[in-house]
Length: 312
Image (tube, rainbow, N blue to C red; front, side, top):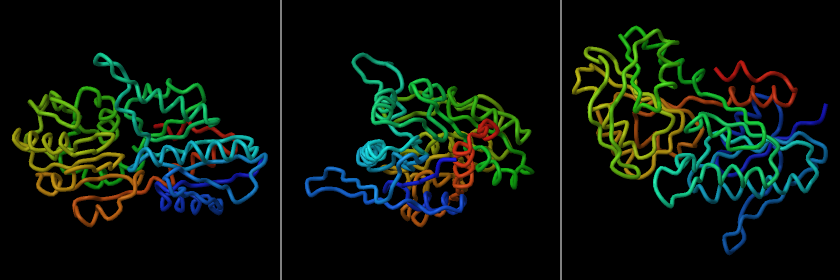
């Protein structure tokens, strides 16, 4: 069997270290920096000819730098004659612009997919895409994992508190239904109208949350406007407690301040994006590792084994 080699960009080295620890291998040696003018500079410091190469890189802040790092890393190992290149992207950025919903706007989710494919990636391993159909934007195999196995465990500990799973919008109902079914809890929906980018206004709650612990479930928390307004709406509708759950803690702008001031008791997230001390600023954050999930997927891909059981 061809040898496995795992490299990491600068976006989330701590997660990469956890993944290789799970797999009981060493992280590949690579120099990833920048020239004096800011251009990304990459050098792979070990032989990868004929190897099965995995490149771990979340497209987190600064997004453009980390995206370029990934593209240049792919090109470097492709030109070094790697047999197969899998881009492991725990957080896939530019995914929110996935269709032309207004005149003269781009579809950046497709653009980034084309860039990664053109650079030379053989397949993609990612986690909780903003919308599942983004898989179709790639012309190479995509293994789309869900954070459910990681995020459901802390919820099981509070499952006796009369839970109701709350979707932040109509688009998130399918994701929320999976959790509701696993926890044998009812489902409700937040009816909101978005006023502009990163702005939303909660209108009302569809469903019964009175006297229950409301768990708001989303794929990401960016500026935290949606989730904090949704939490307040749930409390206004009679919920006794609110817990927020999201896979990707983007936490940009005033997110931490909003979470600290909100009625949310705790915010459960994964380490798909590094905290960088944000969990010290906001004590409500509870971070759970996706390293075993991604590590197991990498092992199965390398051994040409089935990954489908991890999709649940």
